[in-house]
Length: 399
Image (cartoon, rainbow, N blue to C red):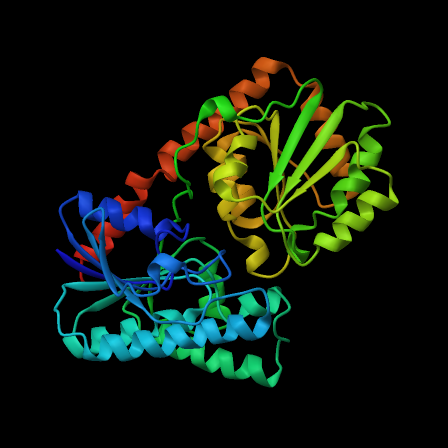
């Protein structure tokens, strides 16, 4: 099968689309990717890629299109989005190679897959969209736009138009379907739940793993935004150390609530027990996982987004560690099925009690929880399992 893939991000940017394409190629498919020049997380287009328009990576043919580099200010992000939107539409409109199917992956923004609709209409083939992020609710959650404002209304019509032209929509979280039905009013589309596989970085030297020393150590690694509620941690830990002063909570990440978190740590005098490491590249962040005692995942109730499966939760399962989950919806259901987590409500006392309970648990019981999480990952989220499902949807015509 000849597969055309449209996604704004690709290796060396660290996204699961690269692993999926590599696996599809390994299975004997002819895979071609239309993407941008790598810039996400670098604040500039990588020097070695400025003149690269085409390359082959692990047998996958990759076309690199011009775009403005994404930096840390809002204007650059908007220009980044729009530049790939226009360049991909222009490229795919004139692209003369023929494929059996076009597969796109929608992270932010949804307009990045618009060119795939142009190509599918031109050659009368299916466009299979893998939805990892919902629009236009995503920029609302991050406070980039106001719901029901003029810009929201524009994005709503634009997003709905793009979604409506896809032949199949694969959903990375079951509750996404509610958004398509209730908000976008797209009841007559083909939907299928297919989660995203965990995101792995390059291999690391195990001898370099972080050693924590004595005590009980918990790790959160991810976005520090409003919906994660990480600022509750210093307050919960203030209660924990009244009973155990050898419990330590490590936080890695960056986000809109970073300053609020730092202020809470300082206000409560918790710098010894709540260690904020700031943003760390994924390759180095992985060094913090092997010797940690427990992992923490949180997603506060906030409409459809608050009911989804966080990508970090899927990654957490691979490390064979017990999990403390402040989570509801689809994520809660996953943790209930794994039998490898303590699930608590998003309030200070419940979080503190769960941390204390996890510390007091027998070592073998915690080890069993970690093994349960890993087994669930292998059964439900492993790359080969996910690609099996994607491959089937690419092969079969829309019903």
